[in-house]
Length: 147
Image (cartoon, rainbow, N blue to C red; front, side, top):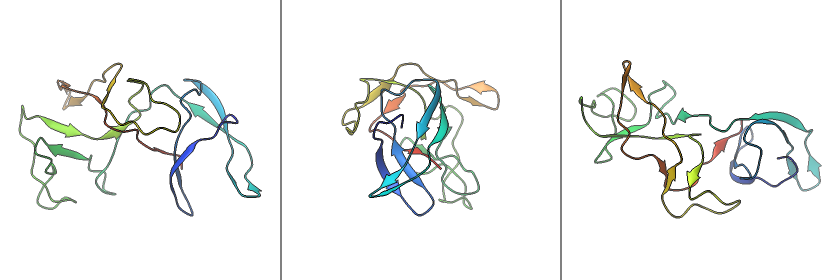
């Protein structure tokens, strides 16, 4: 990416998941090129954003990956995975990516081994009512889906 190595964490015939270099520009265009041995792809342009929040999903139906405080899934008897509904006022855990920089900052090619707090929190709403964020951060560096 922009001539720097990215760090691959998953690869399949149709998808590459990678950790982007931490010193990329926070906004604008970057170039992406993939190489494997003597084979090299064409250069393509991608747009970088400082944040690009997205929730991880439990399934193809679009159920957000969320758990109760005891780590059991939030859902219904027919959801995948099977879960139980959240109650009003309950502490829940949501899983996602692209929430922005952390303290301490990440380091190129190094797994984040300590909890890292987000430098700023998002606003999460349930039926137009803001939730209270108790903690936001990263326990380890997440992968970015590059498909």
